[in-house]
Image 1 (cartoon, rainbow, N blue to C red):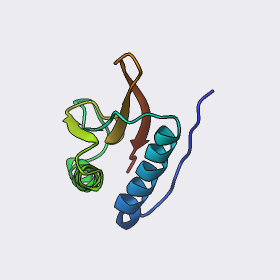
Image 2 (image 1 turned 90 degrees about the vertical axis):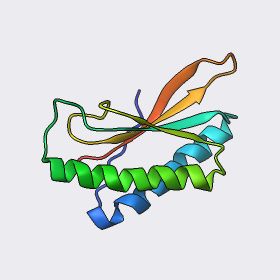
Image 3 (image 1 turned 45 degrees about the vertical axis):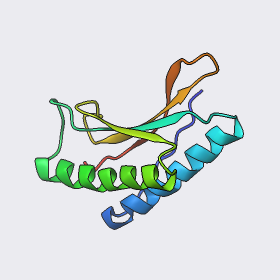
Image 4 (image 1 turned 135 degrees about the vertical axis):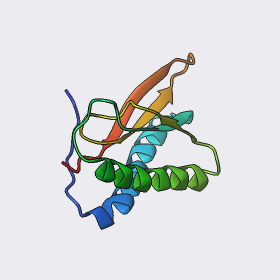
Length: 115
């Protein structure tokens, strides 16, 4: 099975909604004892839909959210940019967990679709 949700919001609400989803994801991971977490912002791929202006706007908002995630965590959560790895319709956050034997697993995502 796959847990999935769709949130419809205005552009002005995007940053706040991304942060709320981030808090939910991190809380869930903490409940299961995961404490080595990284968040990657995956940006526009070569093959994509939408205008460069829409991508610029979405990536700018999400870059600010990524910085907020990093600073809120006191740098405990590693953050990075994953160039060209976004979905064809928009940028996304990828949440990566490290398991008990050190393997990394990409788990949760927050994806933006302006199209």
